[in-house]
Length: 265
Image (cartoon, rainbow, N blue to C red; front, side, top):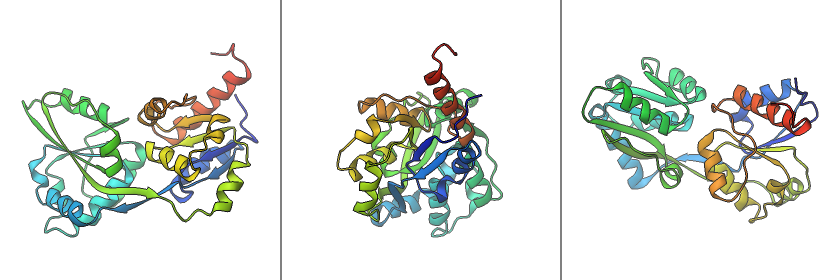
């Protein structure tokens, strides 16, 4: 078994939001560092009106898809601004991406039951298509503005997909110039990007300087983020099969095993 003790790994997300990752890595002796490149906020103005109107009409959807904890949190916030309750959401089938989203949904909406889980939005759409008898399916995806702009799933013919942004991510402008300078002077064995947004804002905070990325192994939490980085011209070294802390740590181990002994498969 590969010993990760002493490895320096940078996770481009806040420490509080990455508690599970921190626990897994520290148990392996990894020196974990955090660089929260972005923060989230609920949409406002006309976008907020659209989110509220969508929840008012939630019963019109055969399926509702949550692809992140932030989507669940935003849905709970906007639901309070309607005359509906979680019982109205229960009229639709629910599908979620990732274990952390499952946990957030289960603790936020106590009466809701999840019907399908998937690795990403694409796999969920394919599962919904396979497991439904209806000739036409209305599916709501509660998402972010950035996801709506950057990720374009292939939609099965029977599905009418409505993707509505309930939140957005913005660059974390509270990070000091000294913090960024100190970061550039560090050496990391791997950098973990948890979403396309975490990568984009990393580069912006670095003023486009990608030397730190080029000198480290690149890990992404899920294939969607991996594909995004590759389209941006970066070779991704580590991508777990599932977007979870346990899968990520196993993929990191396997990568460094291969780096140490290429004959191991």
